[in-house]
Image (cartoon, rainbow, N blue to C red; front, side, top):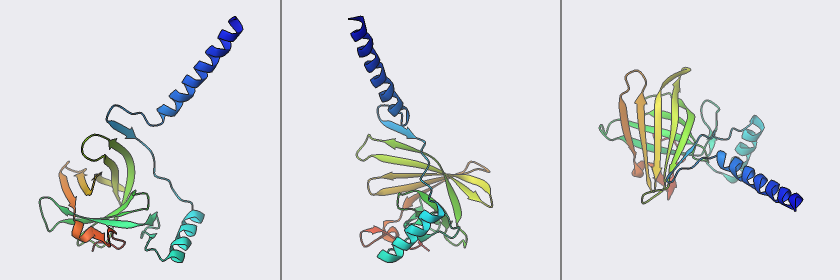
Length: 186
């Protein structure tokens, strides 16, 4: 009898430990998931395979100008406060932001993934992804990219003075043929 109790107890503890271990990967409170995952990186061989596949299927995905990531689409944003201020952000096929370019500038700045939050509450699930803006190896500020339903928002906080800039998707520029555009916004 004691032996059976020992075996049953061992099985229950094992199941409990396994379930706890899988829950530790993405801890969840009632409405928000804080996920600190890193976007998958591709090896050079994987990049070449994806590029070849894209050429074979005539898709518009290409490497960004730094050679990092495969650009799948672009979203065009307009400043909430100044309609002359606009940005274009490139994304890979998994919706990971790669680079940001300001209207009127020739160079893009690399975006480096920090973390992602997911909120199940409200009318639509909301994803907030944070990226550091890098220029010449220095961190200029942080972007918070928010996606909810058909809407995309970008909030940029500049490091040197903490000033915030808010942008909203420009649907007219961003959507082509019922999908995100595959060429830069400007």
